Each structure stands twice: as structure tokens, then as C-alpha cells.
Image 1 (cartoon, rainbow, N blue to C red):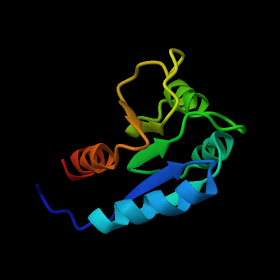
Image 2: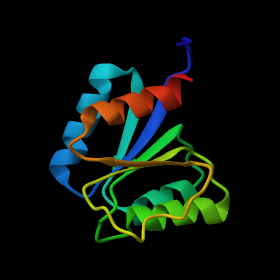
Image 3: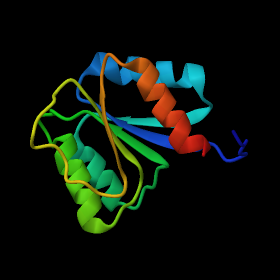
Image 4: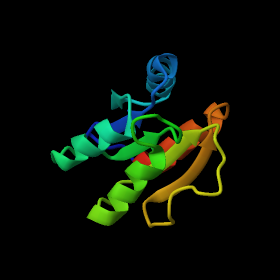
Length: 124
């Protein structure tokens, strides 16, 4: 692992209040990063439209105001190549289109895989 002086930023998109609080705590126990949270895919899309950049985006799939698939499709359509992870319990055949930045799907109960994936993306 190589050390970097720049603090990496993660956008975590989740509509469940409890998870929007817990997941950043779990991540921050393992890594020194900045975590920004939003409650919907549409809010994330608006944030990206405004020019905000992140080193990693982690999103739930099923959200009432813009899904994780909507967010990933927006990123693909607009050429935003930020690594993207779906962190969800919804395994659906209509998941986001394949793209270079789509890292994959991690089930919400697999904390170790989430942390391992984040470290691999941000520390490589």
C-alpha cells in the first residue's frame, strides 16, 4: 500500500437514516477519508451536475427519489468515471449498465467486502 497525503472523498447515497449514520462510522474506523452522505439518487445527480467530484461513490439501489441505477446511468451518460459501488440488499436483473467505473455489487451485510473494496480503490 502506498501512502497518500491527499484525503480521499467518498459519496455515500442511502435513503435509510440509520445506514446513512452507521456506514460512515464503519468506514471511518478503517480509513482516513471524508464521507459525504445524501438521501437519494436524484440529490446525488444534482450534486454531480453542480461539479462536485469524489474519489468513490457508494450507493444503495432501491431509493424512492432516484435509484442507484439512475445515478450510475447518469454517470455513464455524462462521462463521470468515478468508481461506483452498489451497496444493497436488492439483487435485481436490471442493475446498472456495465461501464469502466462500475466496481460491482456488495450486499449490505458484507462489511468486510465493502471495506476491502474501498481500500483497493482508494489506496491503489
